[in-house]
Length: 532
Image (cartoon, rainbow, N blue to C red; front, side, top):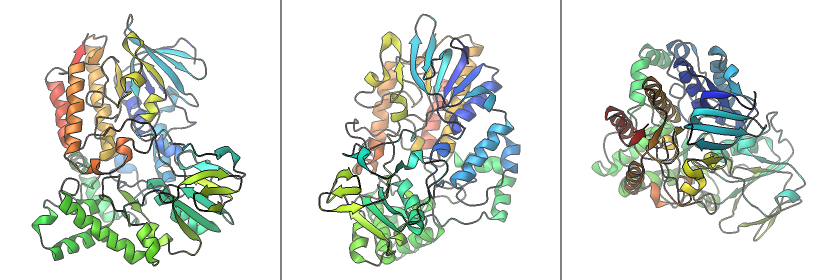
């Protein structure tokens, strides 16, 4: 790749969104280049190879819908696909559509500067290359920038330290090892049961207990798969009518817990618990907005935890006291049961915080824990982290970091005022992490594709969100979020897991109304944007 190559479009990231964006740009006949930090395609599923890594969205919904032959021919072996299976699928897509010839791997974008004189983006990579493009599409992922905690003594530990989001590709054998894992988020909930089965001893350092419901993963049902594939178009259309990550063939109930008796509440919750997965949170239609329905649901799960975990003290430590679903829901395969094992110890680091990592383990306020290996399951700098790690400069040299110093601002989660021709796929201000990511990604990619196609056809040099539209959109996102219980606890939706990060609710609740708004904007001649 020469240092002076020019393209119509540069895409940053070769994950699910970057691959689809590349496919669509080719269909428009535009010159396009994808820049990817990893050595292969897959994004999230390239990097996250920790034990037990698995998608928590049904396989039939977590796949591309743009090619009928692809979706008819691919067979998923289980309800929830494993990381290797998803990566196999994404590599198949890359091969099938010959995507790799337009992807530069093992390369990071370090800076992007908008040249007002030419209406083009000048991009610099870590290998010294300089590229130019009219359009810059950030397909960097919503949860792709690992959060590495600043724990004193991190470099002093004698053994290996791994982050779940940067797991060794060759895997890790825990046999005979004393392992410590810091964190109990989604990655940890998946990894802990697997590590506990292998390790001599596992110590779990928990800051806050986690709400989790059983995934009840199982082999794919051939009859159900056949029925869905017979009407895949209708199935996909129903996907886009879901507000969250519910399964379209297992819809949410259309009533509140307050409308039925206590006996009926328990029956419905038990039925959904046995079904497993995100449909559990569709037991009632107002779990995220009605404190009463939320409490009924939370109390049911609390009782389940105490039924599963034999030691009452450990069960109490594992039982959340905050609103259910205000943090991202987690699905598990034997998570709570793992704490019944004799080789597993739960440590409350909220009560006794970690002081430092020593050469031989982890020291908290009240004890030393000898370890051979440490796993950091400390999550991500979500929504904004991957974008702000690149030096992005718009009009007048203003940086995106400056623009977002008090929290992310943009229009539709797609564009930032002052940064023409820069598009963010599933960025803050869009439903993204509050819905099925595959559905959210496809909707964004298709909207951006149509927009770029319109601009090329009409010989427009640039498109930019107006400040007024941006201000109104940010106010709208805050207004919608404030009507929910998502703002009732500390979560990464609001940046609480990153010290110093502005406390702003970043995603937008409600996917169907969002899609309607995006379509309305286009119908009104890209209302809220300036085309020049």
